[in-house]
Image 1 (cartoon, rainbow, N blue to C red):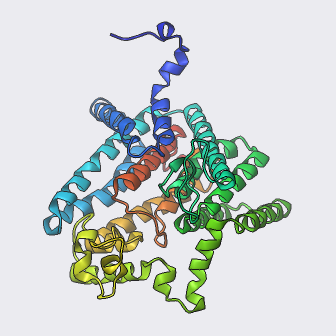
Image 2: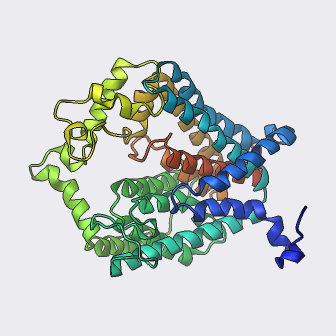
Image 3: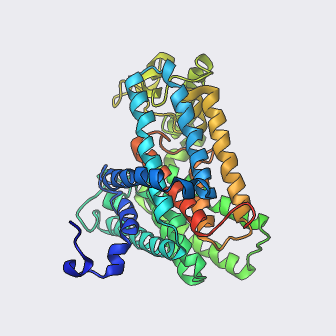
Length: 422
């Protein structure tokens, strides 16, 4: 039995836009463990329905076709890696579990099909990110956030994420979506203020992965804008640089940044590069050795941690250290992850994904005011080969990546972008 909007006391338009609010809830629930999986599962169920009943309209759409190709670039290598997986159970659950993200993406592409919807989405995401950022600043000033949460460590500012260190890279991941409405409405001052707020909190979060991701975001946007023929006003550019220096100067005085910078500079003060990089060099060396021994299809998706001990060095801190006995969870580098877990087949899939993004960015270069442009910059940032983010196949990062990818291709559909329409 359907309940009318009038009986609920809600505006009819609010009820009609339930797909939008379901999508927004995925963002809003990010700090609450695995709770975002609930709306994603609901979307996956409706996505299956949309695939069955709306397949003709979907298959004729560029956004859906590109989303499907991008998904296959990661799903097929995972599937092919299963015969030689060191942990078949983990490989099976990760590979076939990815299908729920694909179906949820179909729901998003099919239902978020108007620019008005994307404008509301972008504004809602911007409000959520602004709240997270201000909450993080409260933690910096008081030692705990508005809800009494804290990281429990001077190394990190986590705000609403509590003892989880995801605040910094969650802000980077959703930055393109949040900026889209501001940029499309040409609200320059608001855009600059919002960007500086995000940059400051990402900086003080103490997560070096987030620092690098933010740098990639800015660099990719700048390269595409330059390719599109855009030349920034020198006054605006100088003003932005001054504000960035101010953000850096203030942020560098916080304990989280001081300690992270000191750790990063330790390699120049006599400490080993491995120690300065929190053991990344050991992990990467182990990844290369693992690939050398399993170069065709790797050790299986999400099998890195289970094969780690067999390829680690005798003094490896992740085997013989105090905190872990099984080894590093993942390679902390997307190319090495594909190499170690899925071999040359995985690297081929990653190259295919990169080419898809390059193609789309070229298409969008002529229309940098569009929502899909900033969405695409955000996704390209997550795919950067020199990134050090989480595993592409972990439940959290995979759900985040495919959610954002679906938003990108939903915007491509909403904006009517196609080979002859760019």
